View 1 (cartoon, rainbow, N blue to C red):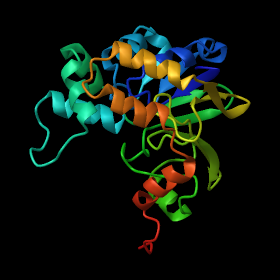
View 2: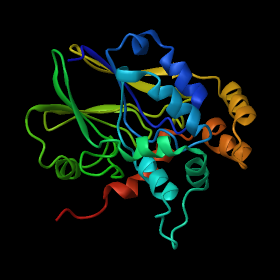
View 3: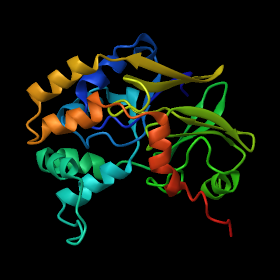
View 4: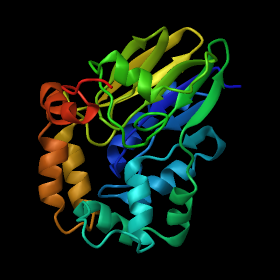
Length: 257
């Protein structure tokens, strides 16, 4: 049973940002590193997966919606009438059969007992759906729907997907979103979290966006890498912009049934 858990999410194939976070002493010393999805959908997919799997039993990978999409693309099952994200399709073509097999086998959700704290459920969107959107200001009835079926033994739910870090209480249960490693919102920093018996804490690792952009451009073979870097590494969207973009997807504005 781990005494400390470092939580990373939404690496999106950005190797320099992942390296920066893995170099943090609290991450290196954590008994377990849980990565809550969207590992490889980005400019350095193979390198990120190889680094994560190289951590062995210290790391637990949880499936994200982009991981599921990459598997669907790689296996040729993507619907013909739906246009995939270009970098997802490119990343799927870069990965080996072993990489695809790894992504296809990822669990969602996963529960881990944290020593001195209790059971923590790790997911990407919500426990019931890796693509469902919940935000810090999502209405309580939506949270109740998303957590339906969870027992009182689940002391906390840790998620990702929206790239926005927050901690809040939902009907006496802690909810934490660790933010994003590879495509941050708000500030040019990689957001992650540390869980221990003393509680849940958000952390951030400052990043030099220009240096990371240069490293990615030099190493990635993605055809539109400069445009991707300009949008997702150099142009940091604010939390307000992100909430305005994601907000309609959490059911706000609809009358609860």
